[in-house]
Image (cartoon, rainbow, N blue to C red; front, side, top):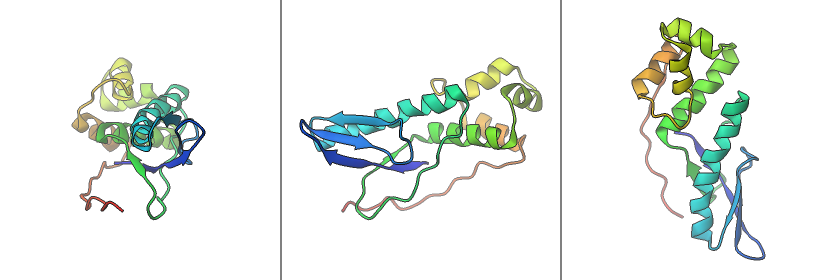
Length: 144
């Protein structure tokens, strides 16, 4: 999954949140915990800008020691990686549909952030682009 470092700073009325890697994702909260909760929504919402504009989504940088992070859900992370690979290879949704032997509408659903897509479908999309969706299990980071 994609895990983005987040900067949370005190402002005059509460806490301000920003992501260095995703400048469109800005939010705030009354408390630090509330701001971090809002950061998840801001990050997920910002992904829509990249998908609508068909722009590559910046991948997360490395978090500094003690820095908070926000993790994109696995399904959204897979779709981000798929969009980025399509852009790198110059593959349009119509071309991906041809390679998958499906309709362009089906591919639009695959890359629609609001549509639930089976992970096997996303993996197949990678396969027809000569790529493999890979997973690994890591130890959950310990709290500071």
